[in-house]
Image (cartoon, rainbow, N blue to C red):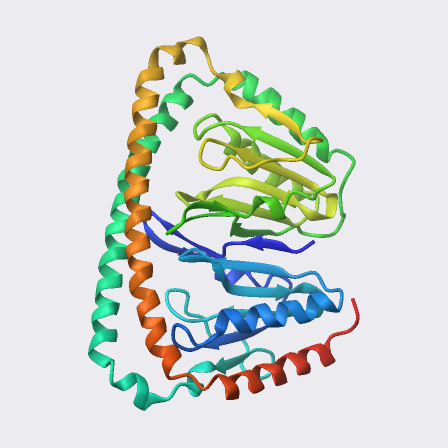
Length: 358
């Protein structure tokens, strides 16, 4: 089953990147350079489809500015990654030529065609920056309101009950270990705040043998349990996939331990994904004292304010995307897609030939 993630996200502090975590096992990386509309996402989809047709599992990394577009693909079984290495997630080969490479797709753009739009492109870039700054400002305000509720929940949290739930979750790791191995953690996002609203890819990640749903809001302690589980798994020699919150990139929302087929997923009012019927559920609202009931009106007000501010951020990002789309139109008009497609096909054929059967 293919898996889908976001390697970066729009956050209250600006764009946050986990792009460095796309290659996790030393995969060779092809860094794509070029302007908007030059075919980076199309090339990655074509490559991924070719490998999937050969039976390889593929990881897809979506763009938080346009979830239908790709910012990267990884084929672990072929030790290959392809990433969009342009702003705001500029990357260069870690070991140029000998291991990694640059594919400059801008070489297939006719400079004379786009030069006619120099002033318009400069203006679009300025306006896009202004829209991003405004969107991040709204997100910062939304986070402040969101943290009000988080502090309220934390104040009435029965930590004895929380600790008991943590111990129960940790018991799922008992008897499992990989001696002599140091487990690692890979940070990514399974959610993003986009011009289309709050979007998640959780449906592609819930094929684990065992799933535990942590049902609760920030401040109820789910993130603490996830961190305890991650540390325990790493100590036992297991790698973990740590999926963080785009509103607070340092806080985990989900945790997958692939070698154990074990996944822990947070379910909240923002990311109300559907989970399989066999999932075990821990309801963190059960750990709150009765005193929280006196604050329900305040919590509802904060939720409404958060929705208003985050909604304004979404609309601002949507306005930015229209500017981005116009820039794409200009570059597309100058593209030599025939030449580009030949070059892409040559790379795909080369990589397929080099890959051992899965």
